Length: 84
Picture 1 (cartoon, rainbow, N blue to C red):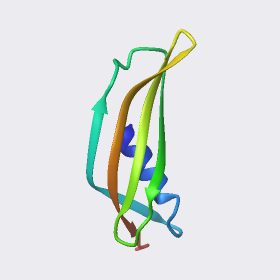
Picture 2 (cartoon, one colour; picture 1 turned 180 degrees about the vertical axis):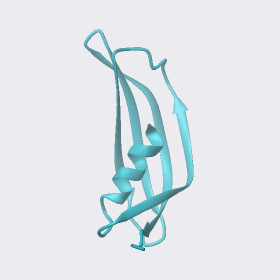
Picture 3 (cartoon, rainbow, N blue to C red; picture 1 turned 30 degrees about the vertical axis):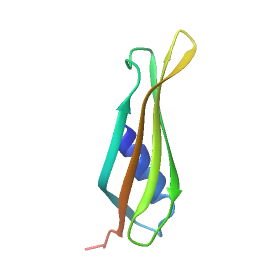
Picture 4 (tube, rainbow, N blue to C red; picture 1 turned 180 degrees about the horizontal axis):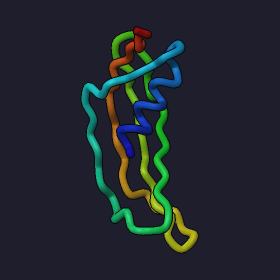
């Protein structure tokens, strides 16, 4: 989920038909992801032409409390999908 949220955040900066591929990422697991709902939030730390640096957090909601379960830093390579 963390990787997908980071990729979506990076893709939000790109032109139509955007796509990204993960070049690298580091994730820290901070708490068990046990609960009713998981939420992944991604953001761009630094956009670039060949690499987009991202951060993402995964939180779990259990008994109306939100707890940070994982935090990740990543680098995404942007590219545009070509139509056939």
